[in-house]
Length: 381
Image (cartoon, rainbow, N blue to C red; front, top):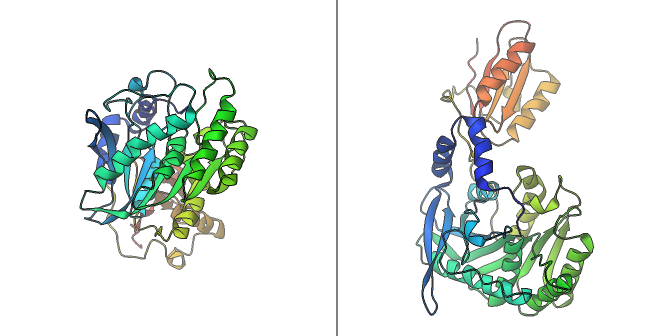
């Protein structure tokens, strides 16, 4: 299950912040090369799965991450297309293509959702067939390196990911499970059946895995996920568990939350490298664009050359600049004539905000931009 708010609600918030949800979506398509890709799934009757595709600039070949979605309450047909934007950005910035399939019966994918009643073990295996179909389709694309694949999933998608580990899919190096499981309160002893399913999956999988679970997960009380993990590893599974404690109001939302990235990204970095996969950041990608044109690079200094900062900037201001360098674009840093400063990131009007804030605290005239994103735009007097 997936407790995240519908994307329509999220986009409404984005529209209020940026003035236009449509403009935001267009910027995103440009930044992450987002597109909808049909995936054929063979069977008695071939059906078509809807998938979302993100990829870096260039022709590849790119290693591939397949991200599997959760299950919201209600009819799967009404569940909107899953777009894990924060995760997609981090992976694309590191050179990975990302495929996000909507499984059978979800949103605009064909067929009907097959729940399997209270048989959660069977449920996961049926869902894993859609992961297999997705991998087979994307492996045919010339820009994909199908020998370097990692499967990820959140909630019901985490269960799907762990179940897919039993299929010995070619090219798959490892599994990453964020709060995986399926809550079936209508089924007596659903907690035991869930743990048993994890144990059964482990018996048929040889892949290393990384599991994330938190203390205040609204779907999995700590004893429930601890039993799932225990049975998985006791049955021969190779899962390293990140028990990250409480997160916000609900640890179940870690993967989809912007603040969750700082928790899971270092662990995923470590895991990918242990699989022999690269994870160095190659570029910065903004999920939203600046609301005004960005000034040209003046060539005064490299953006990360802290020694080149004007001497009027205090030690505290230099700490602020270091924080600016660690933030994601869109970002801006402003500086006043006598050392007033301000920085902002993650909003379309970052440049305007830092000029206004810095100038309010400046006693010797208005501030001006020092750096924007990855360029220094400062001009010396």
